Length: 501
Picture 1 (cartoon, helix red, strand yellow):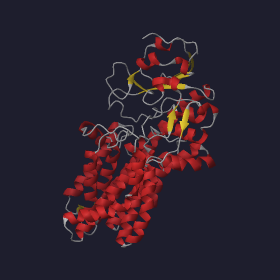
Picture 2 (tube, rainbow, N blue to C red):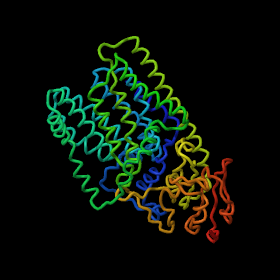
Picture 3 (cartoon, rainbow, N blue to C red):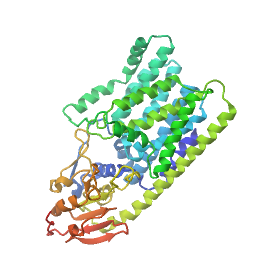
């Protein structure tokens, strides 16, 4: 178990900055959180602490960065997330099965699922802590320490909610499912089991008051219900990283393991974790894509639906040693292979960061930079994670300047852009572009933002992996840096004339 937890840290040891998609944008916010009084930042951003269910990594980074600096603090906190998640999975399996079946290892690569590599770090931290808390809940229940459990889980529920409200919600679903099965196994009817599970879950209810205070008048869109096309894509992308065939084959193997456990007579599924899987799966189907302005709300849950199904597998009676050795060997090989592939993928991304970030050497402190990052046109063509999408955040981190890749999520943000001259280029997704004539909805064709950039508001234009574009649209700008892939940094003259549409 210790080896598996330590192994979870390996993919993030090499990169000085964890190359997770959204993390660099968050790091820009952390810099303003720490140094917002700097003149170059105070004129651009306003940071205000607020009580909300989305503070996990912010709260962890704040004191640590005071001691060791921002970038090392972020690295340490982010490395801890998959380690905590793996530890939580192992603890839950140990409490449910009273031992660790070899199939448990198939679930561990999901700690580096799509949700984590996308950079949903607050959510990922909250779910890792929720799994640890669920293991503790089961252990205290097994020893009938109900009063101690109630006393502990009031503050635990608040802590997890502060990290991210979705993690707190997931803990509630896990606890309800476990207590329902426990009550039914004790001989209660279905209806009385529901009442019993609901009563036990109320121990976690204090954050509801905090939630009401947070969301009162906060706004934030909740939309895109029952988008089954997107849900199927979320299912196929639970292990999305870089190589589409390898990632999909890995997902297929995990599905086949669950099917094998159902049909093979010497294996079975824990009733508790099977019911938990069903509850999480139904929740995934019912959730909309956007909740309170946060996108991919349903997608984030999918890796843990699959993880619970894998954690549920065990031998029906005594372990069949021959089958056990085969399953253990395949599972260990799978864990090592996924760890190796993610490690190499993050190494490649980190090396790409090193090349791209040499552009910062050509910017002064306080530079106002508009970045445009090229993405693929189709979902499959853009399968590799968009790890450069928020490279502009490092302009804030290292140059105390302006970047156009923060998020404007009503009621769920600590950072507000007050630099009105940037106009439509104040927030994400103004930093994302696709090839011209591309029908993709997640970004604009590159020529459109190049035509409409308010040149007087910015000092530099940073093109990162840009698609082909009309060179006339950068006329009058001075190229000061470039890479063979077309990435370039242009200085924008203050008296430059914006080309006519």
